[in-house]
Length: 442
Ligand SMILES: [Zn+2]
Image (cartoon, rainbow, N blue to C red; front, side, top):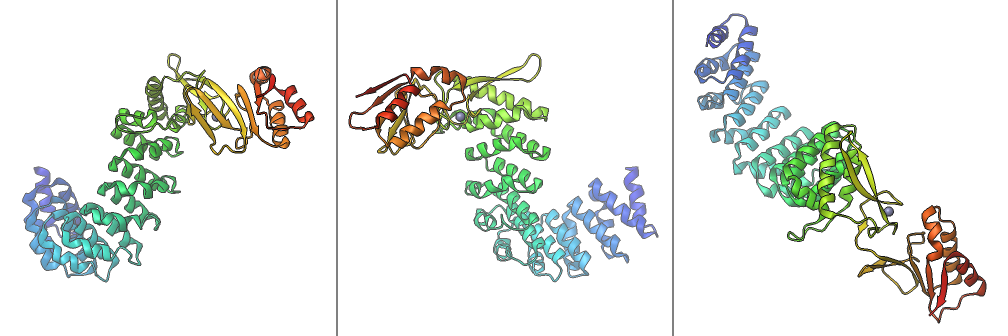
């Protein structure tokens, strides 16, 4: 109490600096007994004291200040701004009309304060004038309006704010923040490109916005940002994933039949990279999510196949500490888990011009369209039904130049069947025989 009494004494000091400092200190204390003293200082003969008194009254939030402020709201610029700013904090709707007038103030900083306070007061009358000014020439104004619309919470603002996601840096940031506050899933798609914004603060704010929207579609793009180079973004990502909850994050990776969520194993690749992060909390978090996902997926590497390389999987270990080892499963060729296919027992390379699909998986057998994937893969059989000699020659070259040692050892086990109606040159057939195990015509 002694402190407050001393500060009240300072409010009457002849030194205006002391009066200004005392106002600032009283603003932090939030004791409403000082309100009448501060109201008196709205007419101090030193402008900095008037503004400090105004700010303190806003911080204390006592509505007795509203009327005296309304009487002085047409004063000089800095006091106008301080009063408009305080109105938002005072939370009294009597200020709305004055704020609507000052939305068109000559001074950008007064307008800025008016917009912000209108948003804070949450009065619907502010909505239309705010939207009308969202394309204002001054980016400060556009920023303030985005913030105000976010605070106002009217979802009609979602589309106009989305239009501002390509605006100047501060406006983009405010638009992200507002879209998070409005929490409409419509904003997810437009927000995604901002996860790669050059500005760190915008990337973090986008992560936070997706967290607030709390739609499952936001999870995978957020997981990708575990590997952002900036700690600020990484921290926002962890907050977001914690907020979604581990179970939801894991089911975004493993899929969830009950809730009609398809698996997306690319999440495992984001996690695997993050396990190697220098940021220990990221590494630990990624390891936990990996373990939980693998526990649910239970992959059998002998029947897992990469849908890009058509190559089998193998276990891969990450030694986190002496006692903690994490097991992942990755494609032997590309080292990724994102394209994981399950229960593949037999892999057939199909050379058929009629085949349109990239591959067809049915009952443990995968038929890969080799004409569309002209690479060597873990093929058990080759089926030739409509091709040119040149295609077969290229296949033989691909098989013979394979650098995978295990596969090279096994290539004499590949069975190749050729449809009767396919006529290949004897030399082509001879090349084929030299590359694989058995060649039969059917
Ligand atoms: Zn692969």
